[in-house]
Length: 490
DNA sequence: TGTCCTTTGAAGATT
DNA sequence: AATCTTCAAAGGACA
Image (cartoon, rainbow, N blue to C red; front, top):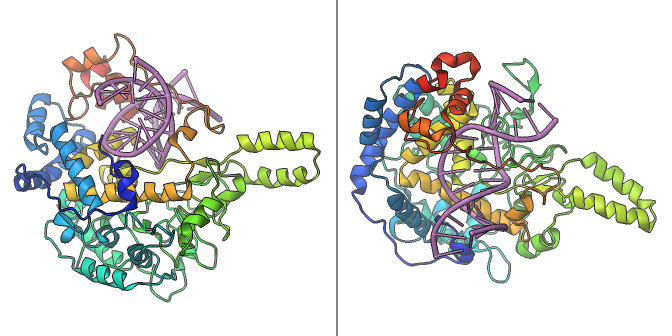
């Protein structure tokens, strides 16, 4: 499995080596991918929504034809590796001409190493921070200016079109609309460039109007429930809710990637504000030391989930803030015995630092709402299948965006929680979470069924894992058994 | 209420 | 080193 951070090495420095993707009929592939994306959605929609798919042979054939072709694993691996390499060496080779304008920070060389050996912020990191947090007081160095200029030379390749523009040509209005709206986003961006992820952003017109008071503070009303709801995540990143005084003023670096359903990347179960990497907002020349001092090893004590600004880290899920505070009250009165018990309790209540999202997860978060809206599906399992297919249909450049985002997420996560390990979240290590079931293939169940009826519900490649009946049930539910494939209906 | 489903990717665990 | 397992998000379905 390719790893973008290359074991962390690239996090510490950029490589100036030139790289180039292996050709492998790239052009043709791209064209085929784009057109396939269009057909893909139609296919998915027809199979999922129109409930009319019956001819498996033809669909699988056509699938094979239009599939981003021979995208064999090896090819994908190579691609991924290339992407990694490209991500590592953003100032050279292919990435000299940013393939995705409107995504400024990915073009910044040396961003993989935002911190200089002495712990101070690198100039390019400052650039990044300034672009992403315009109000952040980050001094720009000369190098940064140079790089910024360099990076600003973003062409506007015609092929860079949001996936939904491709897949939903009939929704050009929407895309255009969103494109315009996206310009409200306080992210350095050429006005004529469609943000690659723009389709996901549904900023309203009032939002992000410079100088305007945060209109998103007005209660929005949930059309479903009629109940006023918190500010739309598009207005203010749910990742990064800020203190009341700053809400809406400082966009998060990934703020444009905000999902539309109000969930933050790192939801906090209680405690008001959410912010993914709040510390980043206070980044300064000694961020590294600050971080390591603020987030001591391995465990982040509950109170550390709150930034000095009162903003908890979004990756931290504190199970019970109230209890923590009351607990500390009690603790002040305790004997050593109680203190032991308290320690024990605190250990159990260690905030849950979630894993940083990977590229696909970021993509899913971004695209889910669209798929839900356009495919009129609500079943997450089905949606995820579609998203999985679309993920594969993405061009390498488009995927690269997400890999890069994910890499930065990991980097930031790593910096915020130096001692954190994914192992901490494994069942048993995290008290707040129960052990997840172990996915076991039931002996003699399922797969033989698939062999005879590959792809029963979708014109997807054969699924080798779970049983078809469960798939259909999960996909359509019991109330839509008419949509189930033949074998499942038996 | 908790788990399953479903996807990909990252990372830890196991072989 | 290769393979396996878990967890990240999401929300309806289900026991």
